[in-house]
Image (cartoon, rainbow, N blue to C red; front, side):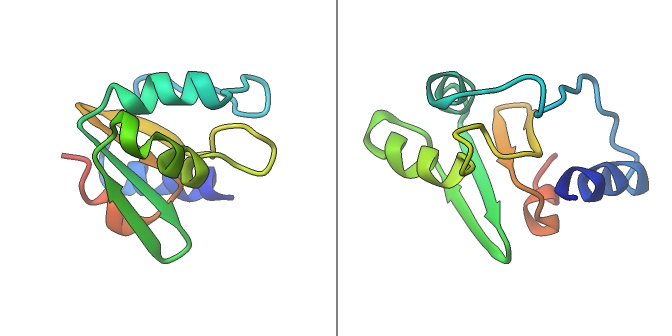
Length: 99
């Protein structure tokens, strides 16, 4: 459902999606997730109405991964990279920081 909301948000705001992956088929585990997130300047993680804004580094790696990973051990969807920022979970407030 979150991916559907994200796609609708992108369409309504004229945001071009360059690459997509099916999270059900392409699993991203803790190590692979950290490679994606840890390389970014900022990570925005939305969980319901709560938003975490974190600067990825080794000191907060576990905090970030705990928030970013789903119960299945896979990176939560939707997850997207825009510039030097990583956005995880659908939350309109954090999507307004895409630029």
